Length: 184
Image (cartoon, rainbow, N blue to C red; front, side, top):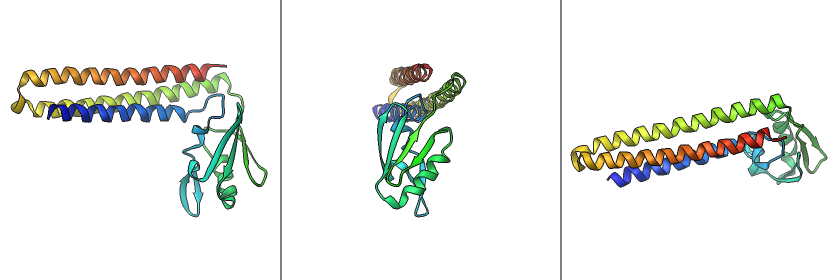
C-alpha cells in the first residue's frame, strides 16, 4: 500500500517535470525550433488541430523554419495560424507549396521577458509537485492505522526525497533554459 502511494506520487511528479520541460521548449530562443510551432492550433476543416499533425517542419537555418503542409489545401489556414500566433512575431511567407517562417533577432528586453515567462512556468510546475506531495502525504497519513507510525514516517522521508529530486530537476531545466535565452 505504501509502495503504491509512493510509486503513484513519483510517477505524477515525473510527468510534471516532463510537462515543465515541454513548456520550456515552447518559449522561443533566438533559434527557430520546430518545438515552438508544434502546439500552434490551425483551424482545419472547422477543427482546431495542432500544426505538428498538419505539416512537416524543417530547420534549414538558425532563424528560419520551413513548414510543408501534408495537405496543400491547408496552406492558407496554416499561414493564418502562424501569423496570428501569440509571442511569435515572425515573418511568414508563402510560396504556394511551403511556408517560410523567419524569426527576428531577440532584443535584450524581449529575452528578459521570456526569462520571466519561463520562471513563472517553472514555479507552476513546482507548485504542482508540492500538491502531489501533499496528496501523497495525506494518503500516507490515512494508512497510519494499518501499517504503523514508524512505517509512515519512513515513507514520508522517502516522499520528501522524491519531491526534492523532482524540484531539483525543474531547477536544472530552468537554469539551462535561462542560459539559452540570455545567450546572444
